[in-house]
Length: 251
Ligand code: 5RP
Image 1 (spheres, rainbow, N blue to C red):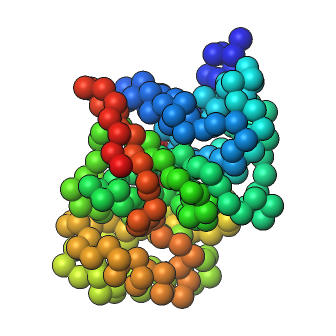
Image 2 (cartoon, helix red, strand yellow):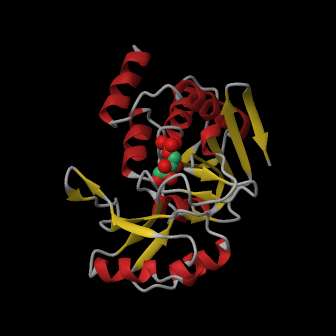
């Protein structure tokens, strides 16, 4: 049956079933129901919340509630999930303009600036989502913060070549002075984590929120060896948030 198949896919994709799972499902489903119509080019995010948006879209395509959809996945994991639902996939090369993209986030501030990439997909996410006419972010309320950079890592994708030097450069960024920044190369099973694009990720940690986000974003991307960073500024149009009191929409 479909629910059993979905569980099997979730296990295969190493998704954790957490206590916030129902909250994630609620926003994932709502984003698709409210923002995807037939004929659209859709960006599909990555992570345990975006998972439910892909699931909902898959269901709706399967039962004919929406037709003529093409989608662009932001990771190989999402690509795998979308394929398992039979969602038609295209690329940015053939479809450079998207009607909508739906994705999760790690942190969301009051201006809808984001930290993304704790799931490792930041480069493809940013490439796809900057091309979307509308970016819909789906989170549970634990992701809402008053300043970016304090609940966990701010990921930076770097080239493997001389990554230690790139990591040192990241610690010297002027926009981070006063934030007590530290850096760690991301690892998985005692090996350096490798992104879908065959790069590494340096996770930056801050004791205090980043004060000037625009300056930080510029100085990050200016470092040779940095491929992309997890600050998604002025990109999100809508944020759908679920919490114990229900769902609300921030625009
Ligand atoms: C992946 C991401 C995810 O959107 C972000 O990590 C949120 O994931 P989740 O919904 O599992 O909390 O940026 O690169």
